[in-house]
Image (spheres, rainbow, N blue to C red):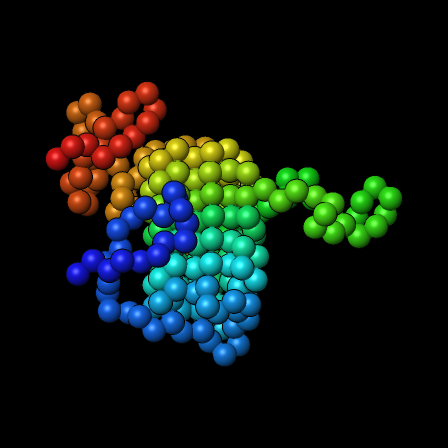
Length: 219
Ligand SMILES: CC(C)(COP(=O)(O)OP(=O)(O)OC[C@H]1O[C@@H](n2cnc3c(N)ncnc32)[C@H](O)[C@@H]1OP(=O)(O)O)[C@@H](O)C(=O)NCCC(=O)NCCS
């Protein structure tokens, strides 16, 4: 049965959600969650994770040990934020997003601890910029997404990559700086050429590419 879920990510969160029967929210005793009422049903927040004030998580997410989610960050439904990942505000994660272990979503392009007159910088002294991760996208272990940057729907960022430019939907990027090395399908596997288009070797799903834009082919 489809379950109506109040997706907190606005236009980023568009995926229909089906209940898996998980409804209890679990927050480990050692986790530090500023606003537990903003954590969706079925979401599990593990030991030593920190969710800052105003951080909104949709239903059925997992936040791993020692992960950090900044103030006001918006996370969709069924996201996995792995151990030690650092998601700085004003990041926005769509539905079904995977953030690998120790990945970093930055928020300050030109960081400095102090102002030019030597004062410790406060929030008023700099403008935070965010990373947007669209529905279904995955960020590999220890990758860094340097804000402002958008990771497209179902895109995949390889382990250890440093992303400094927007990543198209379904693109597979890797390296420092990250460059596109292929396409991935919705099952996460690298697509193989198939006639004029592309195909997932695991599911058989077909994809069409036009002018550098990939989309699921009509079945
Ligand atoms: C990027 C990735 C998806 C590519 O997987 P793949 O399609 O099986 O790629 P291959 O292993 O065949 O490698 C293809 C090429 O990309 C390179 N490559 C693979 N992963 C890379 C990475 N993370 N960074 C840089 N280059 C990478 C390989 O060296 C190879 O280069 P070559 O053609 O010059 O020899 C995978 O390596 C990866 O990083 N996955 C993310 C894993 C992760 O972080 N999981 C998180 C949960 S623990």
